[in-house]
Length: 384
Ligand SMILES: [Mg+2]
Image 1 (cartoon, helix red, strand yellow):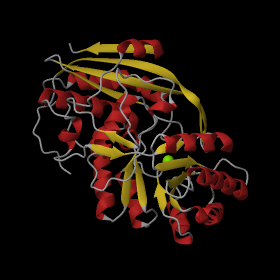
Image 2 (tube, rainbow, N blue to C red; image 1 turned 90 degrees about the vertical axis):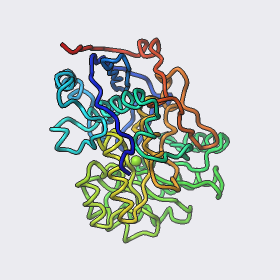
Image 3 (cartoon, protein in one colour; image 1 turned 60 degrees about the vertical axis):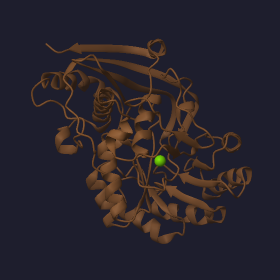
Image 4 (spheres, protein in one colour; image 1 turned 180 degrees about the vertical axis):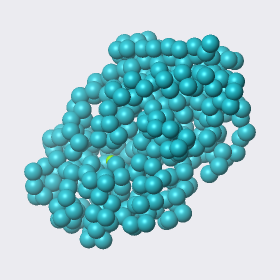
């Protein structure tokens, strides 16, 4: 999965950034808690040739922390990037492992990497997907994510997703007080969507090993595609124990942070599927590197958003298009969980499939007046 194209390192002239807050359409509930609004940073790099690249920095509580420390760190990282102008320079095609990052948190790094790749791809006149790999898929299947706290609302959301053409539903679980209540939630959604729709669960680290084994065994009659992160991220031995104790395939999500974590998961044979998030892995190339490790071990992967705006989702979509075929339904149909997006034209979803934008770079256009509406703070630095 090596990039095929030779591109030059961009000479950066200016970096601008905007901190935004966009409310969720309905409060988004997972076992990590309830989110009322999404907070992140939109980043724009401008090259000496006047070409722009955009990226998004949107860490999520429960997935590597809050925005605050990244916001404080941002100007220093921009300074570093601008200082490198003309000299060795930032290399958009460098994978960005933890050493290269030098302690820069993954979400911050991902934002810069995506913006650099967007800029480089625009300069090269190709899509970001084409920059990442020789033959990106043109269509990526996606699942609907159902995160409503109340089962009745979850059922309604799942029903609407099926009516909209989705063939895979991901249901958040791990929020009920008992195994029987979890089973009721799963049963209600399965009954509503019928037997032909793929149903996967996500417990977001909610259970102990014993509880996970009990809950998963109890939900096995409902033909689940897999269950994501039933136990805490750090408990890889526990995850392996759950996997050995149940018939349903196990996916790791919060556990998948970097190369070391993926190697630990693969060595322990703890997961059938890895859920990869560019925002958590540190950008597109770092994500594809993790996908390659999983593939070599015979473990499946999906790429998901981290509930970003359309900019971050577009980046994840280009990454997903670089996965080996057949691509399993990825968690990228999340833009509508927010009340608004930052794009002129939303990414399209047609019957549970997202086509890759064809315009150069990310292939999306930021709606600057919308961004202004949601901006709570902004900054700018130019090369000296
Ligand atoms: Mg998950």
